Image (cartoon, rainbow, N blue to C red; front, side, top):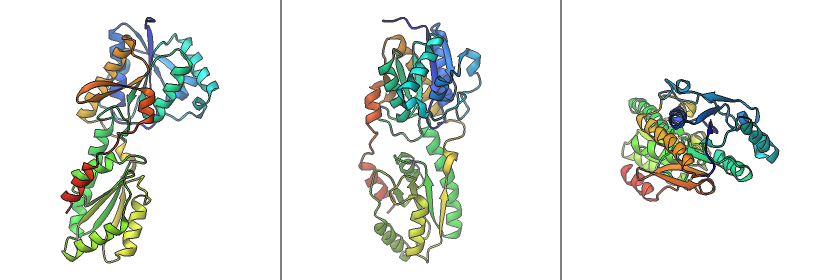
Length: 326
């Protein structure tokens, strides 16, 4: 096994609270094992532009509580092409980097998988995404914080909904996955939760709203993932206003507040465990895997499987939603 001397860490794709905690863990674990640790700015774009710099223990001081990512993140179309990846490899070799930790989502892992197949740089992926849509881990860095941010906002909306006997249609993030909508909807007592993973029957929602009105249940919450096939909260709200004009309907889109803010304790712990385990894996010669936590144990998933597979929602959740909202 080739001796490991220099490793690098980057954050890629959408930012997620807890990424800084993961960077901190990678840097300090690497230094503990007498490795030289480098940070790469702006993800894969920084690899192409040689925005690579050495990091010390003090480089990651006072960041565990911060949202966002000190290494920044950006999209990089050039990395989709072989020539771009070759340029990135040449820049890594200038710094003698022989191991790479990529913190991001499935798109980031796809890039890492191709890069590692083509060149002799072992890669470790850490699941950093608020969507929790990656197979091979029970949670992802940033999910818990995003859900708690959504719950706090929806709780406040319920207060004003109750004061005015209003129906609120609330959109949360989740273009391809509905975990934020599912968890925040159950946690706030939403009557309906609309997800990309399940076909929305708008007629059923209208009938239930009309039944609720007849029994004087005038406060209703509908939580919609942005990727729901109906077209998000704006379209759902439009349909309800058209079909139920007697209801006082409002639409609220939570947007990017779900990405920001200080990470929760859960996300800080998860990110710290995964960052530590990433360096451990590289030192043990375990390459080209995503590191997650399954049943509270560190779990390795080959990068290609983490890319191809998706975390599926158990149908039991839909039954729970139906019963508890009745």
